[in-house]
Length: 65
Image 1 (tube, rainbow, N blue to C red):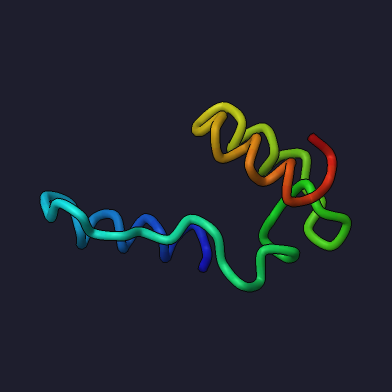
Image 2 (image 1 turned 180 degrees about the horizontal axis):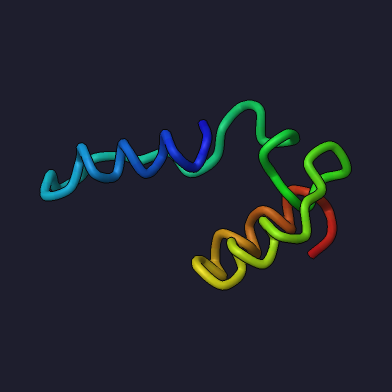
């Protein structure tokens, strides 16, 4: 899922307790800015500033944490 799709799901599920919103997709290698395939310093900075927990998780998945 792209960040836009995740944001749309969050908006659609707002106020619905227990609604699951995926934060990691099957194509994470291309959307994870810490992987070799998806390397992007701008996105790394954006994610680190917005959601440090997600940043740590993505770094761990990419093997750089």
